[in-house]
Image (cartoon, rainbow, N blue to C red; front, side, top):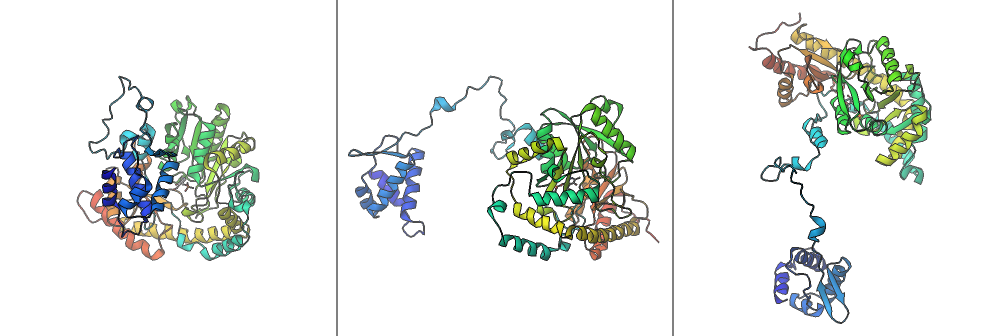
Length: 508
Ligand SMILES: Cc1ncc(COP(=O)(O)O)c(C=O)c1O
């Protein structure tokens, strides 16, 4: 015991801001856990230890009480305080290792690599992750101009709502989301997207990622097949894949999804499509293909997930109607997001499910993710009902349309018609085509180093890359920054794409 007192005295720092009680407690816990104080050994009396350490006896008494309450020691009236035996029962924790158990040879020698800790699907998710550390700046695809968001209006609505905050807005919120928001969204979607729905069919989520995740968990089993467009959004692919679905990439052409004979012979459980604006190539699924897909889904009981992520932004024509609006057989789960319309960090999205599944999805969303954020949803509901969503989208459509044109002008100035701009006049990005011999990943990496963000088309293919190109976003780039940023990108493209950095044909 003398040794214990000496050790404690050497460790205690009387000058420290940490109270002596807390220091002593932690030191004794450490001594017991590491075996310095062996199970069964008797602790000195509180009076003796207090004297040895020069602390108040009450301090030691408190420490002993706490150690006893947490099970480190056992106090027996009259006979003293003993260290409890809390060593793990070796029989209970060791599992027989099957002779065939694979060695952990994925771990590197330092133990720094987590690979051996991960599931196969977790490992795949991380290996193929596409998320970028930078989410802002020229020419970040898929990001709206958050600087244009009417923040003062939002904050005024928010301040007003907080004044009347009540338990209904502040507790967990099972039920598919804030009812007035679901009503406002169903009115909006009926008019703006020709979606057939009632407020009951709307489920509020944190965005398209979560909507897809929920749909897959409720409608498919591990090992089921899912069609994805080839190429497609890597984020949606990751969600499906990590839920244990087997992905079947289906080619797209100018009319959208174009399944081959062999694809049709093996119907999937889920088909994830972007009919109004194929992501990332930008074409629209033709009416004939829409009808064929809906009929195929009806016959083979396929669930179609329609990802309608940015359809409000069409510059040459009116927004196109949704696929869901044509569906007579209740096979479409429609998913959308406020991220591109307002600001991505809002993390509010919605799904429209067939009426007979509405109650199931309401329970599912509450059970899996514990809904909340009703206050944000209430602000959004007012924002929509007061007409701010429609006017903001209208204003952004004009702004982004101008930026798109400025960027096309810059492409033409630098490259003439040598590099095609692919995709309909819509959305927040286009694909700048590169020659077949180009390495679009290398170009994107070099552009990133030069301060310009573009994404290589390669990242969106899961099998054979049909075309080379760069996803180039214009929505979040102020007009005056477009030409200088593109000049930087053009320089990188010239250096990486054309064997000798030769002078390219210039417009005019
Ligand atoms: C096609 C597509 N779907 C969905 C998303 C993400 O949606 P959310 O942010 O609502 O999860 C993106 C984001 O870029 C996208 O491009």
